[in-house]
Length: 319
Image (cartoon, rainbow, N blue to C red):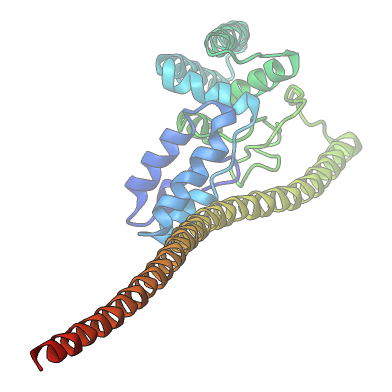
């Protein structure tokens, strides 16, 4: 995946189809759903394909402007065809040095970019996405970059941008990647190219150009470093979210087991209390039976005594 957030098809492995499908799905989602949906897919795939899960975990949440561009790509792809046709016409006019044609195409360029931005804003508004002035400037810079540079056009067509793009003017520049795509929070128009003059003036012009290149290279280096920090933070967040979800699942399982054990203790305590009551009732019954047995024994002894007396009396009468 390149720094613009578009997936590099040549760098994908055998899981390219799956990664492409998941990326297309994620970059069609509203911004507020992107992180949770991505982390859910990572969690699901980590059980079966850790490499693919890791690749998906590196997919970055798009900026507001990038989200609107992606929406336009998916909903109105024919507008990108118009942009591509105009870009080809501009390149042809530049190669032929046709001034009249360039002026006419330049006017058409502004009209086309303006109409595409209006359609992008309409689509965004239809989905409840507010497009302010800053985002509109980023949209204009992105479509201008797509007109000026084929690599930017290819990145836009993926529908998976994570940042807006801008065209540096000296070939391709900025922090986005080697193809010249760069995040642009407040993009400025590309500088006009002036013909180089000869002699000392030409030397000064070349010196200024070299200094500008050096400044652009330093700015690119700093932006690249910041991009790395952001990617590392996003990856750490993704892993932390997955770990939190796993911990929550473990906690829920352990809590359920604890509750079940506590219920078993309650049930056993109730059974113990019932058994103790049964023992107490049985003891009372035993004592009552002992009393009845003692009473019956006394009655039997008295009866034996009366029987013996009666026999004695009978024996005396017989004499």
